[in-house]
Length: 434
Image (tube, rainbow, N blue to C red; front, side, top):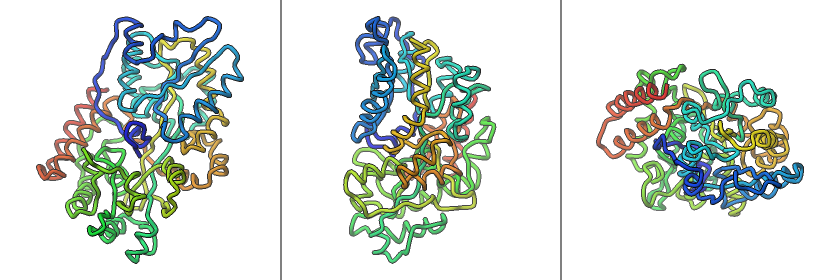
């Protein structure tokens, strides 16, 4: 799910970032974010609403937002000019913190779902809980995407889009290996990954696009494991639980055997699943709905999709996506609310669903599937998909988990030792963010 710099897949990953970044003046904040004049300096006859995001610019995602969705908003709202400003995923979180700390945030931010509780905990966001305009939007939201906006009794955003990952499989590779179809159980997935590996062709049976929780969680959850308790107060007995360690060990075994591609460990020269899959380097991998428009654009048709294989825990993939959040000190608040309402409307949701961004609202599911039938499988997967821990300490928790798993893959630690350490570090991250 991520193409470097603009990949949506990478946007669903989180990482530890510096907090408390501040600029002392509005001009300094503007220089930091690289936008030049701030919103406050716009012409008094036209109110400019900057909409910060990480939309993909290598396909039609960003252009659809700017040239179709926002164009319609601007036409319907004389005197307002909504402008989409695209940032690399790796920069946006810190840039927003800096701008908000300087008192010069954008009107609206398309935030990774994992950032919302951290922003809320730092007091950067506008609380929507008691806002009358937000009530029908919150009520219509799907439970999974809605949960990513909740922090300590309040809602600090609304869903913009949602997604999840399903299994992509290469039909020619399966036929060559005499495998009739995609695996329906985890045990079949493990076996097929070994069978489909053909080292003479540089073909790996399975691609796993990283050691982060976004990419590893489906294997762990479906195998009955977990990362924390439901209250998000401890990782002990969960991240280092028997089921979690068993799933991690299975992934490590496949990697050791050479059945998992370079995307798992990552680093210089690693090939992502979305890049390697159409080239025959990976026979299977998991990815989101954005991959389909990409493969259509590249005229690659030798693939199909299936629900994530079922294990003792079920068929559980990861809820991804982005939320729309308004900074506590957002300029032109009432105009920003108009923009947020418009982006949650059926028109905007369907336009972006056509680019692979699933709607975060139950009322839009039928229309988006009718317009793009391939989305139906992703909608089905969302019924059992699970959000990553919605906690301010998630970035640190995820980074600690990744680091320990990398140590295992490097042969420096056993799975048990690594997960014990990861659980202890995750406890500290959860406590610090509480």
